[in-house]
Length: 260
Image (cartoon, rainbow, N blue to C red):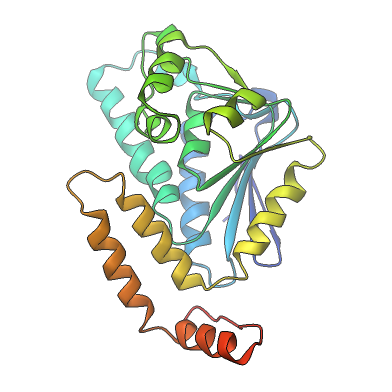
């Protein structure tokens, strides 16, 4: 598929998904969300792709938020549809995906942009990054999982403060809060993301998928995370990758995992 608002590139088993609306600070309009759904679904279904790095075009913004112009005239039921479709078709797909996804945050990550980063498994920020959820200044609240995922990462008190004040956090503050995993210079942003993802991709793919599922269960209501962990742990014993990993460990060789 040819995308209008995304750039897709592959570097070995790493796939880049670049939101390419630089003149709009990479804001998420309806078309961009639809394209993200397609790109992510394709990436998770492509055996040649081991993991994904999501970033924004240029240095000013990762994603500066939703395209607010599309909200004009929307009623309560329309708002429900916007949030429901966005969460299920994009943000939840990332968070629950079977492959690791890293957000490389360059510049502003606000509103839906920060929510996009929150859905990713790991976040790396450039030192010029500024992050926040300013929805209350528009008479809204975050609708793409921000109230839930921010709370899980930084705790209830800090999440309430950030959302209710609408204040932005700089990269150093975000690192202190636990909102991002690493802060680097702009020049080091993508190399750092590639370094971490490349290391992850030397591990067993099915085990990575199981780890994501088990960790997500820790924050899923009415799900026993310990039971999910036991189930995923046991499933790993039935994989060829487990046999390969144990044999390589005992034989003091490097394992070659095939995701089987």
